[in-house]
Length: 287
Image (cartoon, rainbow, N blue to C red; front, side, top):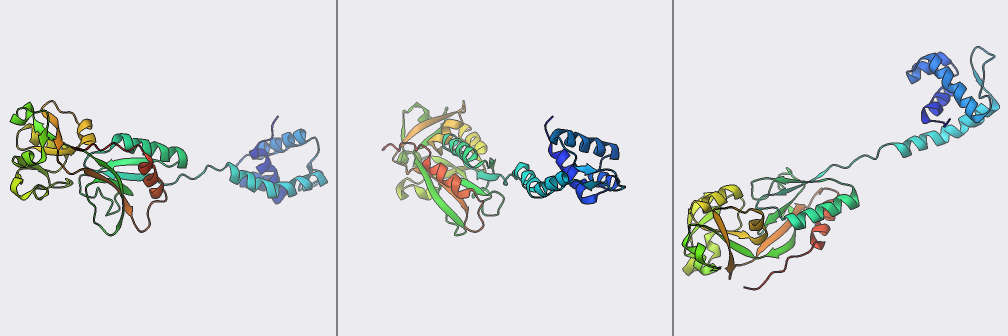
């Protein structure tokens, strides 16, 4: 028979109380159960631990020795076996398309190395909630100019044009940045990273439709309300039978940033930042 922690707790409690009834009440068990437990412990150690000839049980010399050892060892053993408290998950906001390969690889690395859960959270707002504390950190496309946030560039990526399959552009193999500027543009007013002012003055698009998120954006493109522009990886994640993605030449790259609050960041915010930077970077080809 192996000695269990409960047997040791029972013995130490009885040694402190020196009364079976009081010790049983303190342990929350019936007195006969306590008596049987102490008997089994004595059988295991091969000696008597209690002198039961008096009204109140007294420790024998072997019992005194065991009590002295357990007073030191049992609290340490219980502390060592206590479940390790789990840290709060790190919530990672995103809005304009989650970089799946890079993001998932980084999340997997952080969770394995640091035993912390990372929870991606989509929020349709410019900073994905990181500025209000709704999330602990965020992956954001485009510039971030909030002084309260620590910002790290993670990647630069080609953009593609999103056009309706019924558009006259659908017959082309690629489209130029200036050519796209002569069309109406679908504008993401909440979390988009482009506006008409990003085109040259002599090739500046008009706004054909506005959208608050990526789903609305693609619906507007499919309905020929205007053309769209997306990071290449975001477009690859959102195939649409009514939308065609075309290589876009001469366009500025899409820049992905990782951001978290400068003050009181999540304990693992920097670990996730490093994992994202260490992930494989896509090759940015020249136009």
